[in-house]
Length: 459
Image 1 (cartoon, rainbow, N blue to C red):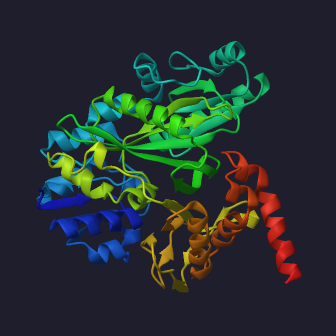
Image 2: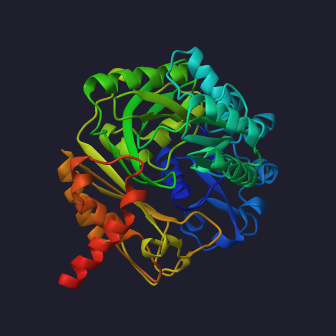
């Protein structure tokens, strides 16, 4: 096992990795920006090193600087968390060249699955169903228009190197193609340094289902069930749960087998997720594979009892998985709500600022992942996610009730948050019955807010 690991991330995921390392007896060296000098992870790590100012491009995205710092502090491995450099093949390669283990898959695996168009082609050859779309890279808006005419509108323009909902735009007719293409390409270039685009048929109002994959360097690959991530806004997930209420046992089995075929196609090791869209007729299609730990990984941990971050570190150290497929049993139901510093009533405008008062929930099977503390500052430089509340219960309705309790108990003053909005969803009949898809929040936001105002006025 490693003796010292560098954590190249911030916030709650840095803290999550740090806790795992402490359990394993591993020292941690944290890189941080000057903006995060007073953060909880900086206070709790074994050692911390400031690598630059607030802007990610001048700190958390400085691959060469991070690797050199890891060498200077005698770190044997680097954990990238999620976001930032976690799916950057060049960074993984740079680690390897400098004798440092990248805690994740190999650089080649990241390239194979990170290039979304190449991944689609590989999946097609492996017998994994993919969404109809371009056979290769789409070089221009005009070419995108020609392909769209063949497969039919609406279409989705996607960055080949994208992720996290960035570099994606929809077009419902030929008049929207050029603007969508240029906008998606510009965002992708800014976010990933790669404006390469491809196109696929837009499956209207699907469920977004992802399967958690875990593999080691000895050829063992297993899945740990699925998560329903359909409650999202502008391709950013807000609520995730496991197992997915919309899946039948037969469909779940078919999707699990497809996910394993997808991971096996590249000999995958480490944690990862194979993501599908599921239409209302029960047809599912591969859309991408995320070659990193996911924000929503605690949902799977709660229903399986498997520590995914610990397994990820063990795999990087060359150890075999501590569990087999036959050991994986889904117990009960788990839900995660992402608490963001934003104002839903103002079109979800970000709300940076200082946390003046903070109280997180507790209780049986309630888990909180956050690096917030009273008096800390929510920075405008980074993602607005401030905390994750995760609950587990024997059944879905019990989990919903437990989440209501947890959200009602959560108090974050000094900034705007989406806590009340999430609570509205937990009481919404459609959500309770499982009648939702990826379009639900976009089409029901105003109704939820109006319902909230009416309820408040009556009381």
